[in-house]
Image (cartoon, rainbow, N blue to C red; front, side):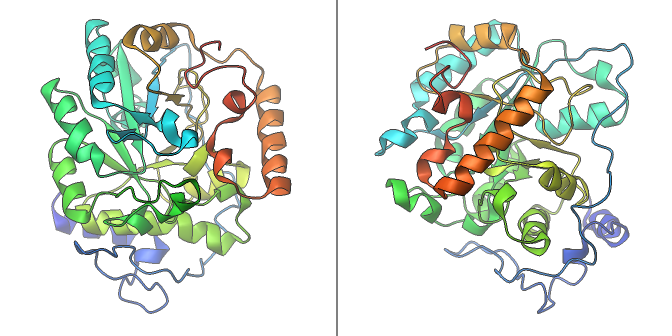
Length: 351
């Protein structure tokens, strides 16, 4: 999209209040460059209104159409984790290649998260391929460009990378507590390169907090709106997708994301997504681990749809939020509740 069109869209989009004057001291954002610190400033802005309020449109009218799209969630492709707690997030390149080959053999066709949402929102869900799959990569680690991207391009696949913008071009200091802080996030030049290769870039908050435990609407607004501003400045195009850090969200968080100009957002629940029926700001993703071969993933894709009631899922989420409040933020809380209970592995297969 030409820069003039992007500028026009920004000026007419009141949801992006933080970007109206990007040089303002109240915003504290400076241009992202390829240096070690590309966080764009840390001072939160004061929103004009509480973005957690109101009743934004979180669904679309489905009618009789049923569209199911598996959304797979990866993190790192490459370097083996030093921490036991993080090993399930590290998929070796050869395992990753086999997993992709399995998707190809099963006739799966990749689309980006944004492409799926655009089709749904425009009433063109029928345009989504019958065997569509969305590949997502949280945290935008540098190994995406070096290890994941070549494998994707070789198979003519696309994907969506979710970026925590405070760490662009920096190491993952938020993983220091579990000994994984040495990991590097992609720099601005790398993000531009992967975008030019057809990979979508979405937001993953600014500093990767547990959004449902932040103390104020202002803090929440900053974590949700700031990454959109930074990425749009960096990539010179609209950013429409968001993934919740750790998968944690609440009604207030979902409303805040919906009121901040995003089209949809992604959680973790190890089931297939039904974008015409599901809350577009709580679309489920299936976690892919190194222990899963291509057959495991295809089997999970074929059979996994929600088998519990919405009431149970809500109770589970609220109970887990209470546990995190009591126990405090701990690295091991990155595991989703089902895996923490030991019922299933990360793709829903029985242990």
